[in-house]
Length: 193
Length: 193
DNA sequence: TACAGAGCGCAACCGCACTTGCGTTAGGCT
DNA sequence: AGCCTAACGCAAGTGCGGTTGCGCTCTGTA
Image (cartoon, rainbow over all chains, first blue to last red; front, side, top):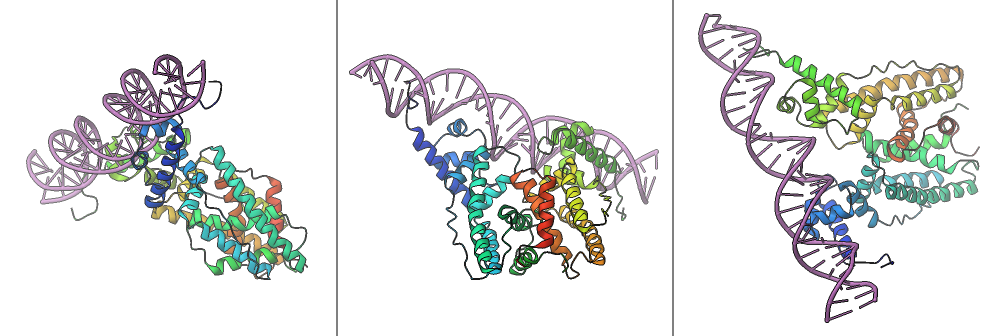
């Protein structure tokens, strides 16, 4: 009794069923189309059982997305030129937002909910991206293309920000010319010389 | 009858009452706290009448925000240095997001709703900001600080993007050091020289 | 003044998120 | 084997967003 595993252990199965059902619903009908009732039915579980484990619909969706997170597994681009590497990096960021899961994750992040796991996942993803941008920049430094005293974290935010803004805010298209223009701007700066 | 003003003209009063009531509710309880019922009660109007004019709660809120939009009326900073001007510009952008109205507008923009007036308002605000950044950059060019062949629109997006991203996505603090770092990055670029 | 019809009040209704209370079942433990 | 109890099933209910149909009321116009 003193152990944490008192009572039934069917809980695990229920949890797994619900989460996969929720993810399927999410991929089929989108973030806004997911209803707790439909998830419950698809999982062969009662609505009450869902609300016992997840307090809100948002937490359920968040958990479903996080527990089946796509392994980013990005090939760090290595074209031989820092400029092209950075463009490829931004393109891969933009393309990743086409995935329903990642898009759902992004939209959840914009909502005024404090979910620790969300915060943690965002940080994890950011860290992965950080290593990529670090690799690219360091290769660029070795080639003499990139200044050695660049704050990687700041550069990451500066380059990702506009792409996020277009996707989330203005909903404008993110085409190749835009990405190239951004990277060139970041490379050369706007200062006169 | 052939005129567009057939029937009652009480409509105008109802519309105004509802919109100001909605805005008050918005300022008091926040975007998510606004309920159509409470707005109706505060406006002395029935819920049905609201739904006749605005199809959804989102459209009501959007209309309320847009019809009472804060006149931006930004003083274009003129510190004598393009760097400080740009920092001040970003700071004023960030501060504007502290306003409940502007914050509501921003959050509405991130939602998957197609509201023409929202699109239009965003464009209008962007255009106003564009003239500011253009002024700053041109003054910088005249002083020899800024390169003359900078795409103003791209520069605007590039500098605003990270600020938006922090506010909307990571919810990290936007402090003076961050803004200064961003501006310096944009000024000098990351290319080695 | 009287008509016409647009605009509003009103009530009833649906769907969904979320809650509560209680009965039931399925494990782990002695 | 048999108890204990956590976890689930179930039913009923609340509140809010959104919709519909009908009847009344007010106002511009004939």
